[in-house]
Amino acid sequence: MSVTLASAESTPFEIAQAETPADTHETPADTHAAQPAGEVHTETGVAHGGEHASGVFPPFDQTTFASQLLWLAITFGLFYLLMSKVVIPRIGGILETRHDRIAQDLDEASRLKAEADAAIASYEQELAAARAKGNAIAATARDEAKAKADAERAKIEASLQDKIAGAETRIAEIKAKALADVGTIAEETTAAVVEQLIGAKASKAEIASAVKSAAGE
Image 1: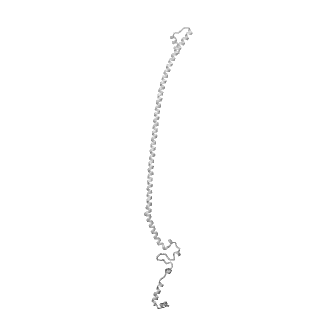
Image 2 (image 1 turned 90 degrees about the vertical axis):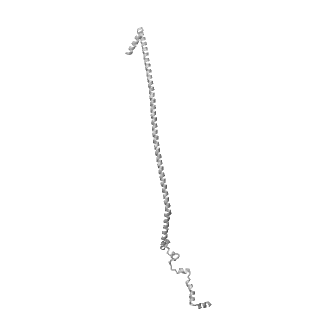
Image 3 (image 1 turned 45 degrees about the vertical axis):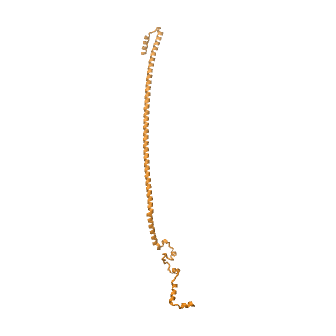
């Protein structure tokens, strides 16, 4: 009863002042409810009530294309700087090192090939020289053997000639002796035959003359 009387005794200004806080203070739920559907929140930049209702994949959301392009440009710039400052110089260094190594290997291979060719040429030259020397030695040995054989043959021929001459001399002596013996035998035989035929001995001169005459006929 006292509260009712106090309220009745209050002035219209006090009543209005007392009602103002009740009208102005709203709960957060009432505030969010009072905002129209699809309104963008100032803090998040995302429309309330639209993220679940639209069902658009975020990268394809047209409302975020600008930020996506910005981040794409930033990412591409960073990637370009990374490639131009770090990756490409390293790759270039690796390629240069590989190129230098390949060039060195090719030079080494060329040097080894040149050395091998020089060794083969030297070997062939030495082989040709050895063959020529062998042929010269063989020719010299053949000539020496031929000369020695000719000397031995000449020596043998000379010895044979001496032996033949000696044999001929001995044959001539034997023949002369034999002929002399034949004459004597003929004379003796003639003397014996004459003695048997005529019963008288003939002189040696007559018998020798008769033998010579018979030999001359």
